[in-house]
Length: 437
Image (cartoon, rainbow, N blue to C red):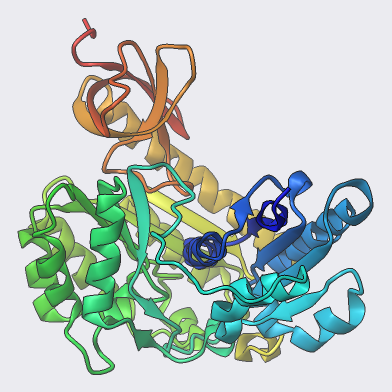
C-alpha cells in the first residue's frame, strides 16, 4: 500500500459560518497535499475548528475535543489538533490541561495547519497543488467571507480580542473566491463578516462596489447579506441596496436591544431613533423585505422599563426572523465587570416572554404565506423518495425556517417553484407548482 493512502484526516467544525469557511480552506489545504477526507472514526488525524465566542460554546468545544480524543483508543486516530477561536483565546490553557491534544493552532496560524498535519503523521512536506475550495454544505449554497475581525468594541463581545481588528479582504480576492464558488455550483452566495457593512472602510472599495461586481457573475442568482451592523450603514448603501437585481430582499441586522440606556451600556452607537429610521427606510424601499435580527436579554442593568421598550419595538416592527440570547458575562469583556446583574431567573422569564410574543408574530407571518408561490433553493433531496427540503429567499441556512416539499422534485436543478400549503412555527410545507391543485 502506498504511503499516501495513510494520509486520512477529518475536520470537525463548531460555531458560526465564519468557522465553516475557515474549515473549508483547511480541508482544501489538506486535499491539496494529498490527504483523503474521511469520517472521524476512520481518520488518522482530526482537526477540531472550535468556537470560543460564548461560555456555552467553549464548553461544547471542550466536550467535543474530549469525545474525539477517545478515538485514539477506539478508532484509528493518532493525532488531534485543536484550532479556531478557542485555540486563539486560550492557547496555553488548552495545551497544558488537555494532554490528549497534539497541537493547538490559533487563528493567526491556521494557514500552517496542512503542513503541520503532514509533520505530525511523519510525512515529508509536499508541495501544495492548486485545489478548489471544499464546500461542506449543500452544493448550491456557499458562504463568502469578505472580512476578518471587528473594530466595533461592543462591551459584551469577545470577537475583537479573538479575531483582531477589522480587515477587509481585497476586492479582487473576494471576487476570485466568488467566481470559484459559482463554478463549483453555488447559485446562492451568503456574504459574511463580523460586520459586512464595514467592508472597505479600512481603505478599500465599499460594499456597494463589491455588490456591483458580484452582480455580473453568470449563474449567481441570489446574494444574501448577513451580519450587518445598524451603526455602520451609510446613506449611499441604504440607497443602493434596492437596485441590485440578485441581492434578495432579506437583510440580517442584529440590533441587540432597543432601550437607549441599554444600547449605550452595550457600546452600540445607533440609538432607538436611528434604529427606527433605518428600519423604516428599508421597509419603504424594498418590497417584500424580510428582516432578521438578534437580541440580548438580561444585559446588566436592564430594568423592567428597558425590557418593555424592547418588547414594544418587537411587536411594532414585527421582525419576520429573530434570534434571542440570554446575556452571558464573558471573561475579559467590559460587560462582565458591570454592576447591576439581572437575576438569572428574571433573565429566563424575560427571554420566555420575548420568544412567546415572537412566536405569535412568526405564526401570523407564516399564515400569510399559505397559498403563495415562491422559488425555493433545494438544500436536500431525500434518497429514493419524492421529497425535498429547501429555503425560499426568506430564510438563511441553519438559523431560519425550512420548507418541506412533496411531489415531483427536479433532481438536477438548484431551484424549483413551490406553493406553500401549510405553515408551522419553524417549518413550512409546500407542493411543486406543477402538481399543486
